[in-house]
Length: 104
Image 1 (cartoon, rainbow, N blue to C red):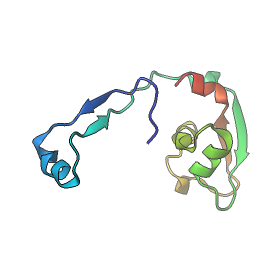
Image 2: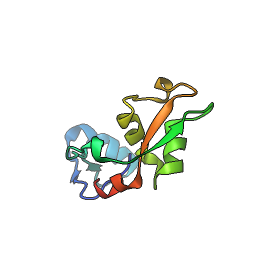
Image 3: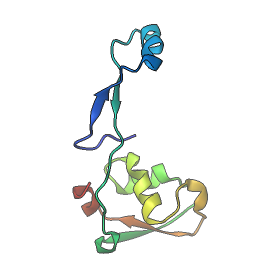
Image 4: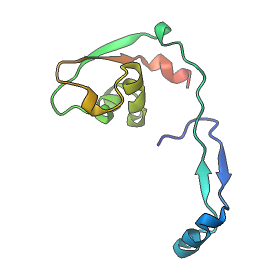
């Protein structure tokens, strides 16, 4: 999972994890909290169009267009197709331009 700017972290000292941490020699367990995004108006974005090909997956396509393949979920989100299995060969896929990354 990518770590975004301003990610909140916390020390998990719950007794539930105490034995696991001890067994692994971990003194403290730091967790990254789920990022809450501001609402993004997708209608203002510029999109590239990509045709889904055999052997494509969201990681590969994201790696081609974005600075980090961990942004695969953006492609899934804007196309309303949450997994690779929702895409078919020949589908026109909308890829937001890199201007989006200034908003994250």
